[in-house]
Image (tube, rainbow, N blue to C red; front, side, top):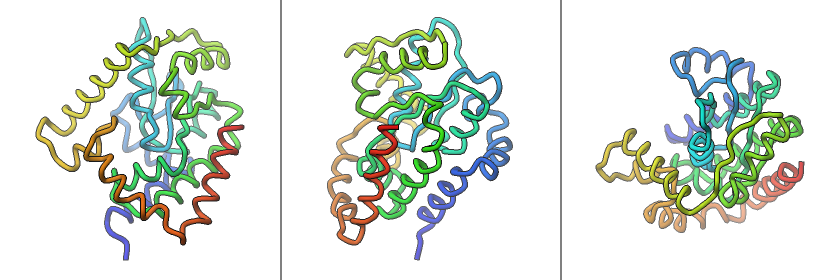
Length: 238
């Protein structure tokens, strides 16, 4: 029997894969937000399957701009990417290897490895036909030289965004912004929820990942892991 968390997770990652279902709901849900719904005046969409580094990317990108730039991010919806592409809005998609992403989802959302892998596969299968019209970056490339990623955005879309310098000092500043965001959302008191939600590694989360890794590597999931890995290769080489 599905837990409440698993039911909610599966429903949301099914809904957000299809623009015809997701976008009408999003227009109502995010009607008071300026950074969660792509519109004609959006300058850059930064999206990824959740737990793939979009928080880091958005903070780093914005810190390099000398003017206010309207970014849309953090819906983790394939539908948002598809809609942005159809509207001709510059879009960055970050792709993290499926097993790493699935494990992070298991920790963050308290869901089964099967649910996480199925969601990862659906998300990337849905965006696969649109990847020639976005800038795609691997998680590793984004976290080692994000300035090069911004240069690719400028080259592809004819934009003139400021280039973030990927130095230890700038990286530390972005991590502090992430910590402050987390404090604003969850307060200063330590808690399991706060630890799981923080968009940077924590010792508690890494320990939980080690425990859950056994579940993810179960033999019955081998076909699903292979399917996800094959899709990752397709996406990253698109």
